[in-house]
Amino acid sequence: MTLCVIKIGGSLIDVSRDIVRGLVSLSEEGICFLMVPGGGPMADLVRSLYDRYDLSEETAHWMAILSMEVYAHFLADGTGAALTEDIKPPFSGVRILLPRRLLMEDDRELEHSWEYTSDSVAALVASRLSVDLVKATDVEGVILDGGVAVEVSAEELLGIESCIDQGALRILRRSGSSCLVLDGRDPGRFVANLKTGGGGTLIRGRGVGRSGPDVRESLYPGIDQGR
Image 1 (tube, helix red, strand yellow):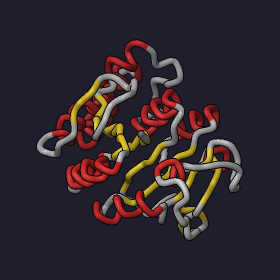
Image 2 (cartoon, helix red, strand yellow; image 1 turned 180 degrees about the vertical axis):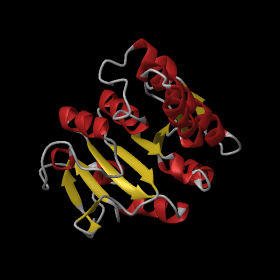
Image 3 (cartoon, one colour; image 1 turned 90 degrees about the vertical axis):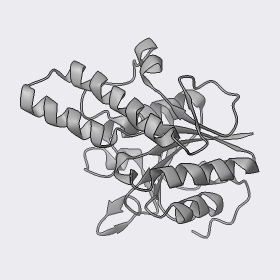
């Protein structure tokens, strides 16, 4: 059974549970989804408290991790997905990660700073499972030179502000994993693009080019990429 790790950003909170419901339906085709939640408005509150009250980065880090768990409960409510603290397969259907315990046990690849957000947690989880990552967000992909890049290396994006955090790029580069950035604002289109391999930007951990399978082929081997 195929496993896919999906990071769902807090920017999609208005449609996020529709995305989860779509993935629950898609899981009936033999794909398991492990979802890593963003922090949503709870993480925004943590940033505000950090700035206003001069919190340490260590404290803000763990508060932000807890905000991911709040969003996880929101995503699971009424969607048919189950909450989990464990990333070890096998499992079926859609599971939404509560990341605190996992990271308390071992978060050696995460710096406790704002350069390492929930994107980095998702990249770390994907790396540990030796699978690629899909990032559902509120843009069409990575914007470079005024347009959506079809494919780019993690190395090229280091030091550039984009829709994925710098920590995640470093983890992708180190692990060699890829991340497919997909627009999630239309849940039906998002699920359709997962099935067809259309849209978005592929961020490769190691270089650019068709040197090996990416997350699109790992979901549906042999599909027509139409790229």
